[in-house]
Length: 269
Ligand SMILES: [Zn+2]
Image (cartoon, rainbow, N blue to C red; front, side, top):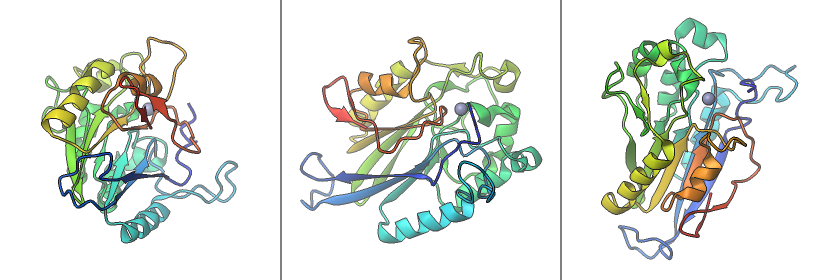
């Protein structure tokens, strides 16, 4: 996987939520507009790519992202900003500061939530924990059981965010760490099957939390030929209430969201 090949400009999705198809708490009858901004696999790229960089000369970087996010929030304050993991590793900023800068800048950008990628364990689970005080956003991960680790109590499986009366539930899923990350880095973190956990999460968000929109922040990867590996495309087909999967890990560039038919026969993105 080429970690340099990260987000080109930040991917922007807009979900138009109308009262026609959804039961909204405000019941105003008006159309509502929620903007969902998301990044993934940023890999410590604080600066823009150099001008002589072959793929994306001069593009990217936190400053440009901040300006873009600010502009979009001015246009629509009902905006969510999410990250699908692998915040760490990729530039000397991480090697020197261990992720402090990444978390501080994401907090300044007012990210709402992120999930955890495999590279976020690159300084060990203690290294991740040490940077958490610099993050003012939620870490959502439903299928890592941190009970027997120092991370116990510092993440949550899901959270809900209400924008203009639209209740959005977001849950996080992480990739299988065994075979990908040295065990001494993640210690006793228990990986639970993401497909099963997704069903639990979306059912809870739909039925208990009464969310209008359900988003999965996934670091599973887009698609694999090996059926035993868990991926976003299969996840989308198996779930029933998840409306949008925001994925990372495989660094897959999509011109537009992929549409899959879920287990209820409904098209989701
Ligand atoms: Zn990854």
